[in-house]
Length: 313
Image 1 (cartoon, rainbow, N blue to C red):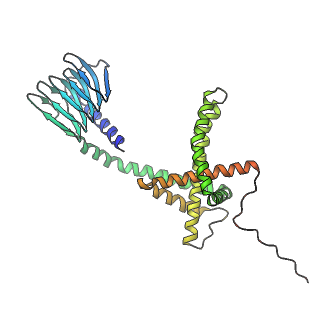
Image 2 (image 1 turned 30 degrees about the horizontal axis):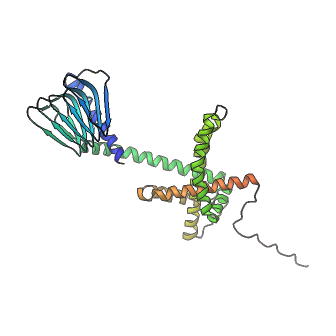
Image 3 (image 1 turned 30 degrees about the vertical axis):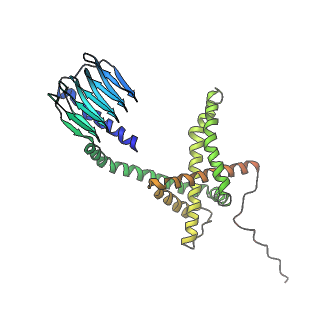
């Protein structure tokens, strides 16, 4: 989350700073970009850089810079000329003889202006800009989340109608062997990408490796999610109603489970619960597929019903 906020802040700052081309005569562009992490950057007098990015370091600017971005560091501008300055959790000193033709944009930063330093666009707080962007994007993000949720429910209902028996069988495997299902799912998540990458290294195995990564694994992951949802939903149905949670087409258990996992995913702290549940279902699907390939008879929910003896006339 912290990295996302920083990225959004930089993007917003650069978007705002783009208007400097229209506001004043822009500095030249030479294509020179200076980037430093855990170190310092110096632009001496008479030197020029299109962009300077410093993370956990100090930027000493005495020449010309189109855009200066400092994150978790410090910046000193003396006799410098810049178009825009972006400071995130940093300290910026705009010293004598410095001219910033647009804005100094800050987020959780301090900016000191001394001497005859000039900041044409003033000092802007990015927190307000990010808040406004968040308010504007919130409805669209909610609608996008709602669309994904409805699509998941639609595919879950379709799967319950087409592959209801397979969902019940995988659920029984999960209920009977949760530890084995978890270990198998964890091992598969680790090994399948490795196998796919090894296959892609070879020419003849590349199509198979790509298929495993972009087709097989997503389908198995979604199937595991549905199995986990059916398992959770079946328990809810048994505990809250007299409905049959082992119906030929388990629409109600699947719907209940998907809704529960979706709501759990809204809470960041509880999202690990949904991930573990999906991993359990993933392992149950793989274990069921292995048994099917071996020809092992499917498990039954209960013991076979005894056959009544014929009665005499």
